[in-house]
Image (cartoon, rainbow, N blue to C red; front, side, top):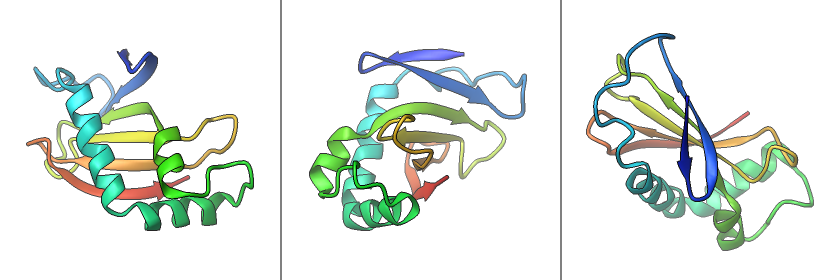
Length: 119
């Protein structure tokens, strides 16, 4: 499944496979994206450092604000059975640049519960 957001197609995966997407779960992708970006911004220096430590690519934005501006949503993972991690929004600077992601986790109330850099 996919959704359109900010002029891009975003993949949506549901776990367990075949589970129904709870009603309203994808109704406010823009609002969730804004909350995710606020959470990333709150710890932006550490997120940039961790991302660059994982990747080390010189062609990635090094300064916090250009880094945040370059991030775009590429995947939404939905986990209806996980109350503390109902949704995970994955951001990248570009799949052609790196395999690393900034993953923002949401609980069932739409509150951000974590920000992590993952490969």
